[in-house]
Image 1: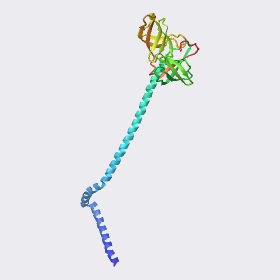
Image 2: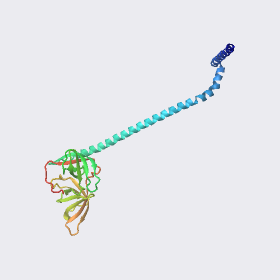
Image 3: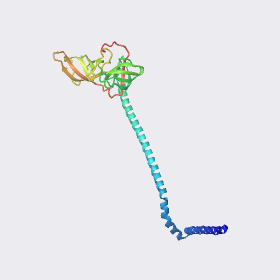
Image 4: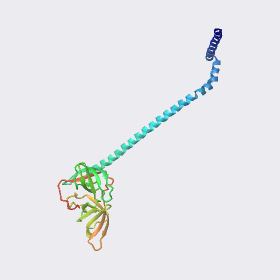
Length: 270
């Protein structure tokens, strides 16, 4: 009984499958199939919409990620190029300063060597510098391409600490070109005081004072100070003279260290 009921069902199933296949074949061979495809196209478009949205979002995300990566790479390239340009500019400045140092005339009894700045002291009174140079000695002279900077206070095998001429412990014998003036320059942390300037030999504002060579510590003829003010002392034979350093060591990166090849007693340093 059960077997008889299953046979008609199986026959009906086979029949509907056959009809479905016929309809599919007809839809591809005759216009009715085209109409059927057009009829179900909106449904298929709606069903496929989430897939299209996902694909579009994936492409947008990948493009954005790629653009961000390219932007970061470009930033890195620009930063590297800026660093190279800055390094090249610094090297040009340093080379220019070194060439200027090489043009310093050799003076008998002294040897000139190049030193680079490591740090600048914050002290307002002493205004000390640290430079990198090998085998410097105490009281070696430091100069820039503009003029006298100071004296080596202490040194080791690779570095030296320098007292600038604004330091009150440094006294420099000075004179003027084509003059018999013999005076001393000492610092006060801000300016230079010029001592023992006779009224008859007082310089004018703007005059340049140079090393006289007295005492043998400083080579002769190094520019030291530019006169800012000259004030006669009432009832005295000397004038009060205020000056400023010629050298602007605050911005220079390289200096020359002048080393004496013969030892001379220093009678002008405190």
